[in-house]
Amino acid sequence: MTTDKLTIRPTQTPLVGRVSPPGSKSITNRALLLAGLAKGTSRLTGALKSDDTRYMAEALRAMGVTVDEPDATTFVVTGTGVLKAPEKPLFLGNAGTATRFLTAAVALGHGRFVVDGDQHMRKRPIQPLVDALQSLGVAIAAPSGCPPVAIDANGTFKKNRVVIDAGLSSQYVSALLMAAACASEPFEIELAGAEIGARGYIDLTLSAMRAFGAKVEQPSSAVWRIEPTGYTATDFHIEPDASAATYLWGAEVLTGGRIDIGTPATAFTQPDAKAYDVISAFPHMPAVIDGSQMQDAIPTIAVLAAFNETPVRFVGIANLRVKECDRIRALSTGLNNIRDGLATEEGDDLLVASDPALAGQHLPAEIDTFADHRIAMSFALAGLKIDGITILDPDCVGKTYPDYWNAMASLGVGIDRG
Image (cartoon, rainbow, N blue to C red; front, side, top):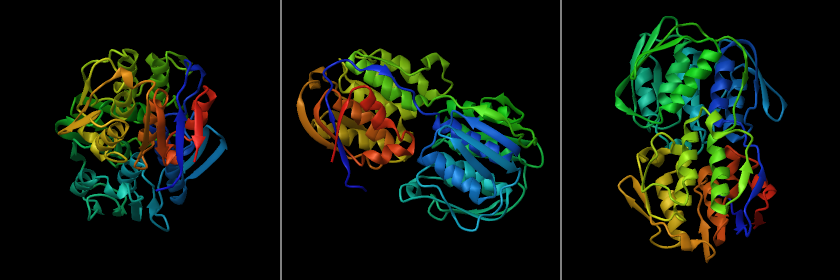
């Protein structure tokens, strides 16, 4: 935990300007892996360069993939179709996508792979994916149910069908889908039960897979059939990050401003773009908001809800407890630091007791980000309207949006460091 802090000065005028959000983290890490699994050279443009994607790129390099970075938004990836066993454990920080995706991908490699992360990643569950891979005959172990994960791979799955519990995260399904195209025979994935994390992210996975030559059919909502095509190198453009866009959409409505992000909300394919309609309704957002299909947007909306005309209950957000931190607890803690009673946890629901009169008040509050980029960026919005909001560990935004504070400053937001 760094001792750094940053205080937002409330804005007295609407925020007006143009900000280009970074590339999608979710799509960048999918494209990096698929390009690494492909034979030949792929050029990924519009990509995100951040902590999460750097960990993925470094892991691929450690496994024999060439990853060049000719400019700030491009990766040029050259693979042989095979991931080689690295000389030491793959360290992936707190990058959930990289950790889950690589755990499945290296299971089709040869040799010993250890997938590990930082202290936060070591608290994030991966057992359902481990169980699924074990059922395929993979020698894999994660004694704590979280990383580190050790895999002794022999280049194949012993079965061509797996059942996966995706109730905690859709990333488990995405990981298996991307690996399955590299199997030696047609492969089938079936959900155990109807529960699944944000299903829209699986659509992102399928779209990226197909761009790299995979053939996938979905005979039902719970079954996918993947042909053993492997992947073909390709040029691939990555759209801006919808989760990052939510902070700019939030700043726009909160200040009555006009922020051009260069991409209309309707052009996004990422699930979090669904948040645009909810945010646009501010200050009359609905009384109940289901966050199940736009999970990473919920911190943004929850902070906005503090200024809504009427209280807001967030449901379908249990998975937020196993993100980079327990985001339900982090949101309730931060909101209640601003004013006691502003937020209440009821089971896995979050109730925000909205009060438009918060705007313009002096309410000094230090926001513990729990090293979570989304907590830092969302609570910055509160600082646009309330005097005294200080963000602890502000540089944790480097996980997905390294230029966030500069972007806010470019719109005229006053920011004091230290």
